[in-house]
Image 1 (cartoon, rainbow, N blue to C red):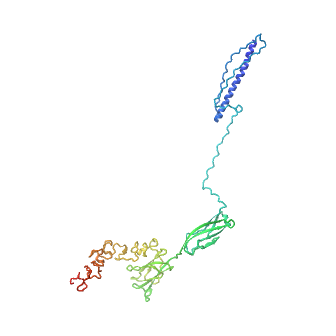
Image 2 (image 1 turned 180 degrees about the horizontal axis):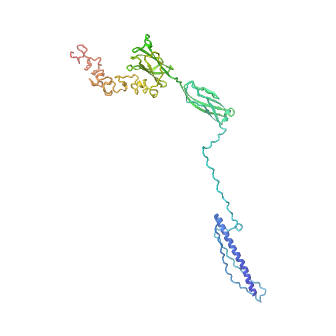
Image 3 (image 1 turned 180 degrees about the vertical axis):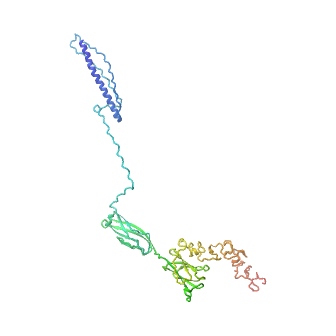
Length: 450
């Protein structure tokens, strides 16, 4: 009996530790499996941990202990075989946890927000620092685009980059003619001939052998134009008449002079309304014209124009001044192109009877103040020149004996017999043979008594 009781105690003593060991192993494996899954996914979130449910161990059937028989004294009891819990099989592909590092789960290092970027710079882009080994040069000082002969300009100086490099250079300026100036350049630079000149700058460094150059500008030099001054003076033609005593009807002489005397002018004299215009083109300083005036206190005009500059003006001169008269130029009208002579015929527009059509002779057949070249009816007979068979001879009846293109009033051969009217003994009867039986200068063709 005691032996049977002793066997049960032994069985319980073995079963209890085995159950505890199995439960502890199961819990450890579950914890390790969860940690490995978390490491494999890289997720840092906490997963609620469930308390594993202990797997009940199968009940162990009571072990029947065989008591030794008396016939087998001293026999050793057979050891019990305890059931071992089946290990939980991990899913395929799950790495086997390393027990040594299963519990050492690394904590991710805390991450910090990236530092804010500095704001983008505003304003102009930075200028690159010039290479100190590269020397450039430029001109300082105005080089005018136009000059007159003898007109001065300057001074000119050289500017290097970097500035300190200038100490080793010697500079020269070439003015485009034979003039070469060594630095430093001074003012009072000028040209003595008409032309176009390019001013250049060159520099050389005797120590380094470096050379630099630059173009300073281009100058167009023209002939100097002096201020033009025009004047008129009146005197009596007759030495017996003093200027102060001159009166209407006396012949007076006007002399027009100007400076500089070598300037080329065109002159137009306008005396009285009934007088013809007097045009002198070109004229020389000291030009004289003579005219008689019909009224005391009369005035006359002299228009002038420079052929060199297009400058124009008008002089108003007294006919009987009592003293020598001197007048200064007065601009006339609006300057158009090279002056106030629109058609370029030498007659200024205020006096030109055809200011849009050149007619330096100012011909005006019908005296209607419209020049013939721009007058639609030159003979003023009421017929436009385009249909008038005598555009320059008034013939309102348009008679035309021989029915040619010319009316009788302007036809040199009215009967069209080949003999001009001035020689034809029958002006209106064709008689080319000019037969005159009785010799009375009347041709037989038109003689009532041949």
